[in-house]
Amino acid sequence: MKLLKKDLNKEFKIVEIFRTVEGEGSWVGLPVVFIRLEGCNLRCPWCDTTYSYDGKSFKILDLDQILNEIKKYNIKRVCITGGEPFFTENLDILVNFLLENKYTVFIETNGTLFNENIDYNNKNLYIVCSPKPPSYFINPNLASYISEFKFVIDDFITLQNIKEVIKFNKNIILQPQSNLPDKVKKAIDLQDKLLSFGIESRVIPQCHKVLGLP
Ligand code: SF4
Image (cartoon, rainbow, N blue to C red; front, side):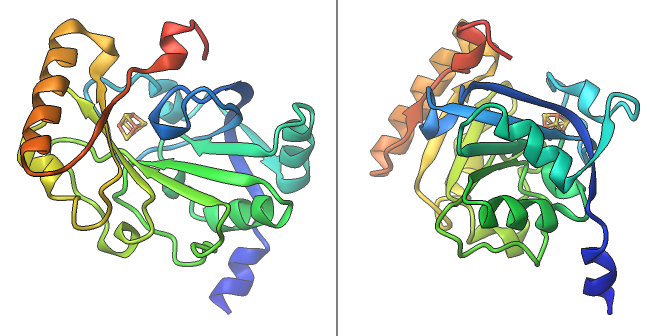
């Protein structure tokens, strides 16, 4: 009964939909349409998308309106971001709808929340998790579905924070905060330390910012 009620809810708080190139992680450089959902359960000190949870920067769109928006770009790759996508209670309806319409779907998440109704086994679904300080908590229900971990290298992060996730997935990205020189240095240092444990990682900047893209 609960699921049926939820299935009737096909409207979403959309902050923005736009075409860019993927600027982070291992899909960097590929064309992608971003769907930014409203709301986040965290308040990270260096957050650069505070407008995504200010409670006033969104419009309500239903599934067909969202599809019409993304179809304009003729790109079959969509990234659902936020805010925190899993903060949207009916996220499963949007994700499964896009998968059914033959889109490759990335979800960018802080990893703290979970939605049990998403089609996690769909080969076109890719979940990128960026664990956040101070706890770097990852929801145990979500952990095994995460395709890639992306760590912002800031003042807080330690080698131990990164090593905690290796039991779930060894696909590790180190992303220096705001491309700052001291954070690049720290990222290289962490990369060396991970290597000493036999763990490969990649240092990748926020390329969309280097390119001046949203
Ligand atoms: S989880 Fe992401 S959107 Fe939420 S406050 Fe942190 S950086 Fe911002």
